Amino acid sequence: MNFAYAIFTTFFVSAVSLVGIFSLLINEKILDKLIFMLISFASGSLIGASFLHIIPEIVEDKESIHVFYYVVFGFILFFILEKYFHWRHCHRGKNCEFHPVSYLNLIGDGLHNFIDGILIGSSFYVDTRTGFISVLAVLLHEIPQEIGDFGVLIHSGFSRLKALMINFLVSFFALAGTICGYLLSDQIKELPDYILPVVAGGFIYISSCDLIPELHREKNFYRSIISLLLFVLGVFFMGLIKV
Image (cartoon, rainbow, N blue to C red):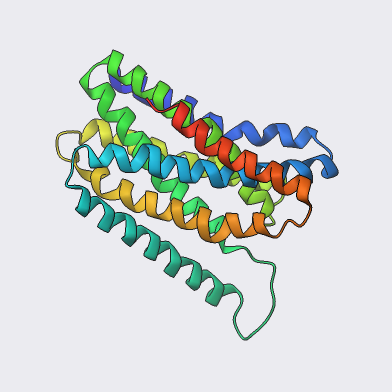
């Protein structure tokens, strides 16, 4: 029965990625303004998720120096991936509108969803109450993250419908994680300790090297202040929902 609960609640968590469906009801001009705000919020959310959630959670259980090695590895890995995407899509000196950050974000989000699934599955393996508490914790940080992810995809050139569908498909990495977490909970207890710091390093890279530079391109003083406030709000919100 607990396995059924784990699968059902994971589907519910995955449905949160459809939050972007509201964008289909908004006209293009309003959406353009919202995307700038979402990018600002997303960059702060990624920093907050990394430094206030992921890294502290792992440091509690592991030697901190080893954790930060993995964080640095994740940062370097995402740097290499972005270089690969640039080489793959913008070769021979051609200019293109391709934004590697969209694929970097999907990779990081997919890994993060997988870990969330492991958390849900292994928690329901323990007992139902622990499982539902874990689902609530995942939902609290997933909602702002999914809003930001959708904004990043739109900013990177995806159509609204394509961004919505891809974000939804990537969310199902959580289902794979839930199944692994439940069925292999005794064998993979330490797996998140190695993957999560890499994800944190990737999120730090995406925010600091891809999203924040985009915010610096804004020359309008009023919009710059708004972007700064939304960035801080993203960090603050991730700290506020820490459970």
